[in-house]
Image: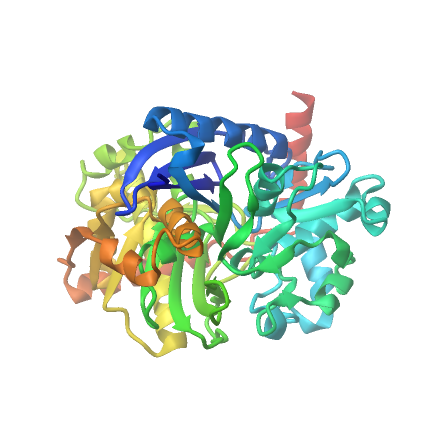
Length: 513
């Protein structure tokens, strides 16, 4: 009897397969990291072939550890890093270029050219998104414009595009031997190419970007049977972009409910129900989820580019720590940040500023500041950025945040969670099962095949794990926020001809080495 659901979580740094029980608890896990490729400053790539090989491996690991066979699985769900673009040849199954990752900023000139006199909001009424390097559409245009022969092959109908959900699904369902080329509404809403109202591809936007619509996957709901795994013979029945999956796994089904995921970056989503709410405060209007034939549910999203990856940078580039959890040990050695603020605008600033020309800064340095203050400032930057996104959500929705549900790797850091509650002024709540991204995909797939009866099962399974309440006085909170906002302004407008020349010199030196 099929008593489990398998979720594939194809993330920015690793791919995981997690088997869940009917009560929403983890039965077994397989995980494998993939290489982060940085060809130039601001460029970030992944190898699609490596991702697919890792996906197969972690599925085997999860089933092996759990002592399970394919007959034990009711369904498979997929969740994924959104906006990361893969273009591949449908005849050979090979990618024509590495996957261009959501953090990548190489499309800055393409974005500026597309905006022209209309600026960043040119397509916002159609897709809910500003023109930015973040989204998939301009990345696909870059591949077609820069990979030899790609444009001709695309126009001939030989090339396919998808975020990594589509890439994994196509391979799972047979690849060149009849693979299913599908995405769901949440992933499609992150390309800039989907009309939010009709939930279909916009021929206007695709035409402006020079992307043949024959490349685009069929858009389906987040919970229906798309096809069957050719190896496991199990239906693949749920797809949700990672942040929408976490919202689903956190049971944020009521209008006004929100969650914040702390991963490589941070992503806060606010459920706006079946209403499309345009943002006036630097947020994204996106699809939250769509269950089968039911109406689509929409969300406002605040996307923060760099949070967990700042800790990785301190570990890998600076050598401040050897393992990521050590950041908390250092931060707890001091009572405050010593006046030091880190604004991690490595690839510009996302919400609520959307400044591609910003670059990172450490400000407020004095001889008093030590490594412990820097560690604390790194953690605090995550909380400060979240506060700014929360303020924007309050302004757009007219609803004040009453508590924040949190998930993701960084929520294990209790120092950060307490400071987050302090700087927000509301309770921060971590669920018992913190793997809400994979769990959301598992729920969507399970609902599609009747393994779960519907959203109420998700609500019933959700349990509070830990709660942090604010302890900081209002005057201190406001003082710290003023300092943070002053620090952010120091990163603006950094990129100019001189800065670009400096980055190019660094790239040339790296190539020579």
